[in-house]
Image (cartoon, rainbow, N blue to C red; front, side):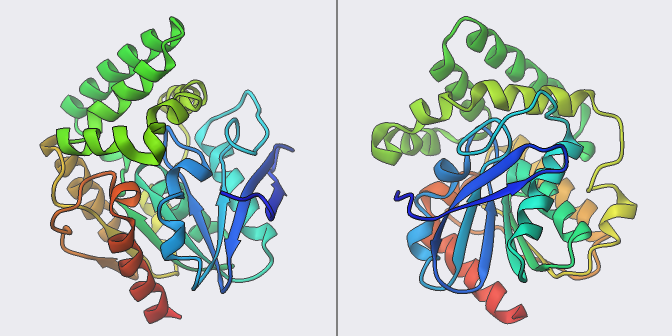
Length: 282
C-alpha cells in the first residue's frame, strides 16, 4: 500500500486522527473494527472500490498513523470518527464493520456531511445476551493474559477464534502474505483498551434508541450467512434493535457463502453490494 496521500484531522481532545487516501470519486470513509487499523481492515477491498470512490482509511487513536491518548472511551472514539468525517469538507459515504458499526452510526447522527452509511456485521454491544457477554468476557481474559505475557500474536489469534469459523480462520492465516495475525498483534494493546474502557462506560451511546432516531441518512446493514451460531444471534438482535429506530434502514438477507471476515476474505462481493447501495442513494 502506497503512502502518497494521507489525510489528517484533529479530534475534540487534540488527538491527531490520520489515514491513507486512495482512489478517485466521491469520498468514502472506511472505519475499521478491532483488532485492526485502517490499513489491515481494508487492504484487500480497496482494489474493488478505488475506481469509483476516494477511499479514506482512518485509524482510531492508538493505532496506525493516528496519535494516541489515554482516553479510549466510546465518546472519544466517536469524536475521532466525527472529526475525521467533518474535516474532509464535502459529503461522504461511510462504511463500518462489526464493532465500528456504532461509530459510523454516531457519525451519521452528528454530521450533516454523511450521505449514506453501510455496515457489515453490525454489532450492538448493548443488546448482547448475558451468555454471550459471559463468553466474550472469558475470551477477553484469555486475550489479556496472553498480551500481559508478551504473546501478542496468540492474543490476536484468540480474538479471531471467538468470531471466525474454522475455514475462515485458516483463510485469515494465509491472508496478507501470511502476515495477518502478526499485523493484528500490533493492535492488541490498543484493542484491549477500547474494549475495557467501553465495558466500563455507562453514558449515552450512538445505538441508544433516541440517538438512532436522529439518523436521517439511509443505512444499509449486511451480514454473512456462514457464521458461528452465537454471532448469528447477536447480529440478528442488533439488526432488530436498529430496525426499530432508524427511519431509512435497508437490511439484506444474509449473504450465502460469506462469514464474519468477508470484508477481508471476499471483498469483491461486499464491494458490489456497497456500490449498488451507494449509487442507488446518490
